[in-house]
Length: 234
Image (cartoon, rainbow, N blue to C red; front, top):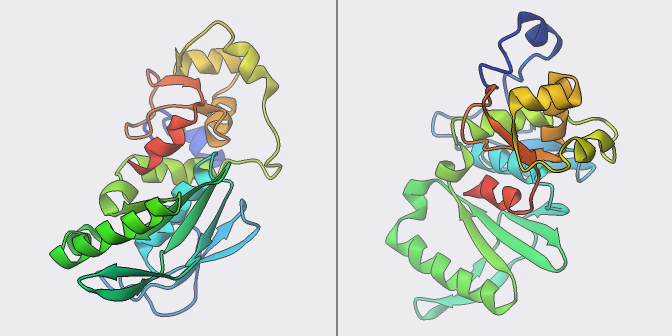
């Protein structure tokens, strides 16, 4: 987490930062390239362990778990047939993200170096066309989007602060922000009475801020908007 949040020794003792992403290994240790990884992500949202086959997929699941608008997600959800290079091919996306109201993303997670090859660029263009024709969106995510140096560790930290009662909402937040567009983190502490309540509000996505920057006392905090979820994957 950012220096401001972690500045108090007492705060760190009572709220230790997660050292590693929460996963359960099921097969080989990770090679330096990240290949050979097999794990399971403990999803509170899905109420089960979600399989992943790379560290990139693990990081992707952290973002999907954090995104308030993603109602559910599933690994390797379907297999499609599409035409590319004059022949029929088969493709299985890594994940399906269901946003509700019949809005779906089919997600491919791949290292940028492999995603940008001419062959894959051609394949993905045809796959995108296929999903567009079926009213869904094809999304390609690489380490550029998934492993942002500030966003990923802050999302991991905030996920660890979500109450076991996932339906809980702090009614004081809406009242405190009435008539205000945005405040600083320090001002939000005063409005809610403690730093921890601000962090919990960010964790539950009642509040939002720019997670691509370290969270500090001057960080702008505002009420959550739907486009804050999409911003997690950009």
